[in-house]
Image (cartoon, rainbow, N blue to C red):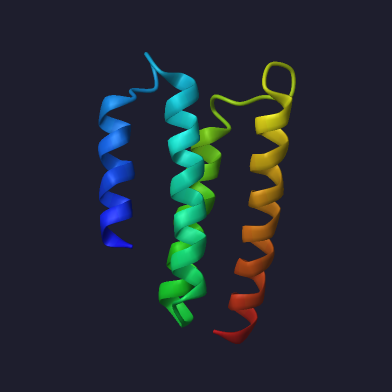
Length: 95
């Protein structure tokens, strides 16, 4: 997973939010999904940290996506956000 994180982080340097907002937001989404995968193969605090990172990435994506201009992307991000928050809640109960 480390290589994937590095690749996405490199993309964020190329796809600056101000110049390439859509690509930047999509990279944030991909980082959130990667964080979710990392959490699924982790335990305890490490899993919670990964989920929290994913939620932050999704919130970043929502600075670009909105209901009016990008409703499909917005809806997708919100569904992933709900899923991550539910997982976070479940992990908090067992940690």
